[in-house]
Picture 1 (tube, rainbow, N blue to C red):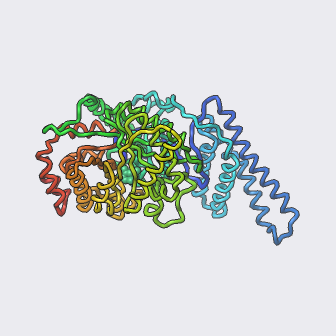
Picture 2 (picture 1 turned 45 degrees about the horizontal axis):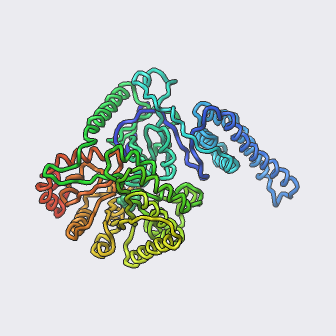
Picture 3 (picture 1 turned 90 degrees about the horizontal axis):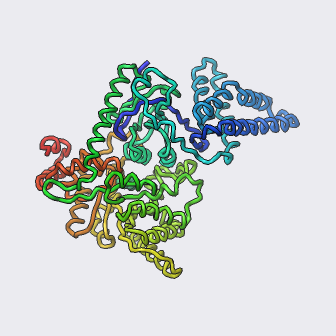
Length: 593
Ligand code: PEP
Ligand code: MG
């Protein structure tokens, strides 16, 4: 039966494919595709994991037979019997084999997928006793996952899966073709997302997350349709269901009829045509109708993204979120050499164009590892995040600074510092940079010059921008956090997503006054938050005087098209009126330019 789920739009376009559910587990589970030749070995790994738990239970049974009823009540022995029975359950074993063999899932993914299916069956049971066995099943799965930990083979990307685009006819008639896959999860960390970035999914859906959550940002950078905040999607959709993601509307359609499929197939082709049209602007300079030059830069997460940045016609990298090098590594942080090599790759990849490397910004919705999510503090977004984390661990910070300075010997590098608010933080940061240079001097290691910039993403910084301009060569406005902190809206929380408003008068005032002050002092300023890649806001930002925008490479051509159609002499007075209006949205709409 066809039904639809509404969420928040993250990334535009249409994806049609079969659902791949990623179950959330209390154990940190890796999801990756194995090579076809490794199926037998992977099944063996799953079997060994299970055997280890069976053995563990046998040992426990042995121990309790020597105990009295007080230390080992009768229920315990019965429970162990149930666990043994569940471990050997035919459906579980067969299912795991199926996902490994037919879908090339790694053993852990296969186990959690099958578990999810069985758990749903348990949920539907009338019998309360049987329903409660669900918890036992989860326990034994967790123990098996733990037993398998450390035995995983290195991650493999399976490039062949969705390289062939099936035709509409394929989709309608033939279930056996190599159809696109759509990933559905309750939640995905930015690190998970990064892992999937190299993978084969045609679209993403998550139950939780706001439009500017980091998970959404990485999904957007993959330039595939995605919807977040779809609340119960991961419970309502079943493995292998046909799913349509309408990224423009933030709607997910499950089990679509052939008429709906055909309609969305048409829409998909329209989106592709539009992309093709935009490609014609690739080599056109971004200059407004009145001759103002506009710099369009790329936001990247990994050095390899430099390629996509160049391909999109970006004039440099305006934001390299270096924290992605630090995430998902079980706390083994990259050392100076590894970081240096990564930054150098990004710098060389940009072939002489500038690269703005932001120092690490972990914390809040970007934990180093899924297992290290900050649950100890009530408001991690207000806690030890970004520069606060760096200043709390000077050795780690100095390591990163030295690596960035060394990479600057290979091309133009700008160093950007996130989340500064206090004069003392500015002083400490600058003194650490001096210290890093001095260490390199002492060791005779080569490094290059860098421009040093600060992110304006805390209202206190925007209100105190003159202080920042005394100390920094350039500023970059992080509107994602600036909005979050100005409006007290958690950017990762879908339940308050409707209050996350880039056009709130307070936000517009902080952004426009920061731009105006930079221009008055002749300092470079750019916007690197999601506002910069939102075509509906391009004219407003141009009208505020912004001439440098940094965004996902996929957005660059659409923004360029908007720039080419704009006349800043008309936009400036209009933007002033919008910023002063009680209702900026109405003001924008009533006198649209
Ligand atoms: C921002 O806050 O706008 C920004 C660009 O940084 P991030 O999204 O990584 O927090
Ligand atoms: Mg930020």
